[in-house]
Amino acid sequence: MANDRKNKRAKKIFWLLCFVLILIYCNEISEEYEPELNVFCILNSKNNCQKVIVDRTYKMEEKEQYDLEDVQVILSGNGLCDTLVQLYDSMGIFITEDSFPIYAGTNYNLKVSAKGFDTLIGSTDIPDTFAISGLHNGDTTTYDDTLIIRKSKPNMLCSISFTYNDTASAELGLWNSLDSLEFVIPVSYILMYADGKYLIRIGLSDSNVYNYYAFETYDSLPRCGVAGGVGLFGSMWTESLTVFLKTSR
Image (cartoon, rainbow, N blue to C red; front, side):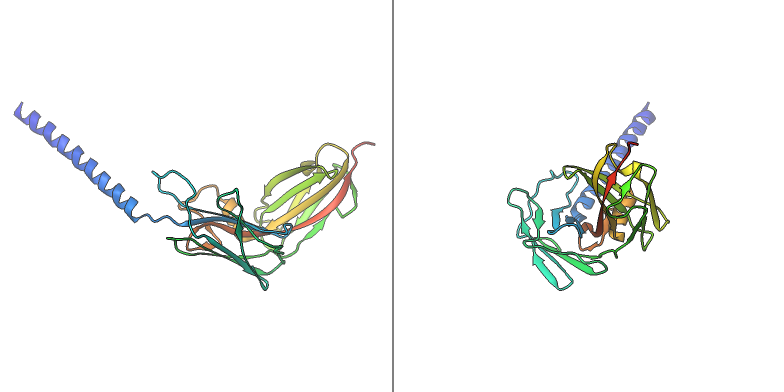
């Protein structure tokens, strides 16, 4: 009986020590963790103004609530430099004050600072222009036709959207052709099942956007095109063409 009591007491002490060590370890991790600036920005040649979303990372026990102070967002490239302004009714969303055009094959930089945080620096190389075949501006097309997009590098994603008869619009998401340098897309995949006029917008991304979206999980927070913080600073070059879909005989 005495041995049983000693064994039970020893087990209790063992589990108590384990619990204490776990608490100490978790506390050390919490103390070592320092929040960082977190940005999301994809520059796009189709936009006159550019947008940057700014927040910070949070500890597991923290409530996510925008509380950044003295935020400054500067976008520069191709001889242009703009200090972005925060939208009045949208915390953390900053836009260029004036038109900020994007040029193919050039480098653009981002600088974000806020009180109490390290300065975040970002860099992106705008993709080059690309070739489109299978459909041409002003063509009349059917579902039997195919759109072919040729890219210059394998690690680029393709974005497709369209506007139907100058009214209804749809975003078709991001396409990945893996190691191929071509996107081969049947017209039936990208256009609505109705005859009419379609303005098709096709965008190719830089490698930063590719790396951000191509992987579903991360061992750590994504740092795609940024240093001194986390998130994404990437770019996309967009071309457009107008076609007329005819399905009836």
